[in-house]
Image (cartoon, rainbow, N blue to C red; front, side):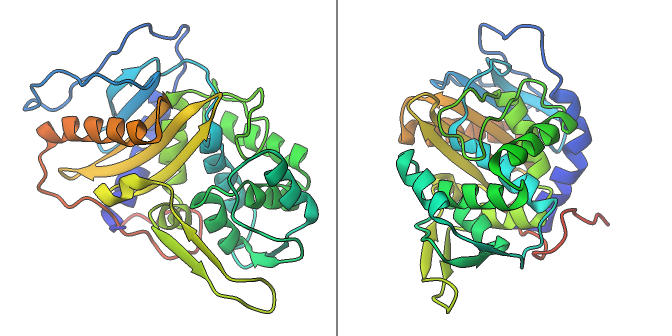
Length: 309
């Protein structure tokens, strides 16, 4: 990831917080704000039930559809899990996988990182297992370690949500399996902006594949990123799906030197969520131009904050 993306994301965090102030009632129709004079085409039709796109470089909303409606967000929940872990764990901390971690994921029918009881992996490795294949086993292991216990960890997630101004968000677990938890497209865009300020999360989010070699502590693992938008120059962030939530996507990309962060919720299919994100990015790209490269480089895997020049 190029340093320009992280700088743009860091610079936009304050203005993104302002964009996250909740409305009193969810809008009933699609709205958009155009900030680029040369973008003359009408806002695209979006099939997702909720969608939101912001220009974090300018701190402006580009597209919004039911952006304050409270809905389940499936595995987008794991972005907050990673965010909380990064604020209290060292990357080289060791975590032992328990039978409970494995059983929790398989019993819930969740996607897993293929972890097995007795394996010992670092926090860094588990963050890849959490974000790329969307492992509920990795989420459970991290929550149990850094709650300690899932209930206390979820309380930390909700505390972080309050501190970030996510007033329409409530977490009930660290993985996004069906529950009473909810969020909004706008809140998730604000979280994505904050999470991508972390150079470790930013680096993980744009990694297509992570290979963990076999050792005396664990077996070999190969984790592939479920975010197909990376093939189009996106720099993150996370996919999610449950029958309750539909197909969800939190994404970030650069178009014409500007960084855009968006969220698609309740989409009808796996392909449709990526098609919607591409459609929105192509639309804003008409005005921003395509002179700048898409993509970015993250900082080194250390520290939670980005140092600005």
